[in-house]
Image (spheres, rainbow over the protein chains, first blue to last red):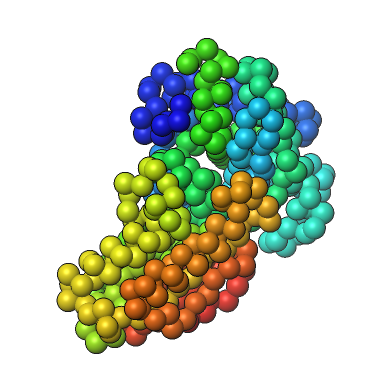
Length: 204
Length: 161
């Protein structure tokens, strides 16, 4: 798989990656429902291979303010995973988790740490399902959080994808409790890890 | 009517005054703005990675500091700009997260800035202003007429360098 680049990945491989994305996002939704102790619905996630330029547009523009939770992955596969949430959706989740209305327009230290925890649980659920399906050991690092323009946050996974090609693999999940929450997962396995994931599933 | 031309990620555009160029939400990427002081031909490159020779899949020359800046200068020269009259301003190259573990990607923001400076130096284009590093995203607008490079960031006052 040394010569793998995302553009040349066959439709079949892409379907497998999409399916992994679906299952992962499903698990993440369940985790979210348990954490918030309420019913959370999920629309069928959309998994897309996009050009760099299209990603910002999809999120409502490069200047849309988002919360980005980013963590590294080690074990049998290495790489990173990012979960992005619109700022309003992030505020909604934090206020729900903490059982209080948030004041002001910025996140306090405690609210930031609650948001990190939400990110941790969601990405953890996602990675758990990936690990179970592939039988690969996957250990996530402690998450880091930033709240900034979508374009700026996305530059981090885009740069990682940029070493492989000009596209980015994005999983868009819409959660609904009493509020519509648009969340995006970006999974960036490194080159060998793609091979390992596909190999573990008997694809290669 | 002047037009504001948008530059995407791993993209570049040339413009002539009174038009201006912008790129939104620069994170670890670097925005390299160049202008010819005399005929007001300008351009902006949104550089993503420092070095095209370090990566096998490097067909998109706009993506890299080395090939992207060279191409921007070439396209500006096609529009009548002269290398000897060019000056540059750069912005971006933030580290968006406090850790980024992969060895080759560590400090990619810094490395993008360094590579951009190196390339501009090689081309003999002086950098007259910069706003780089730190940990926040930037939107930039470049006006070839005046050379103003306007920088916007979340929760910060707009500044012009």
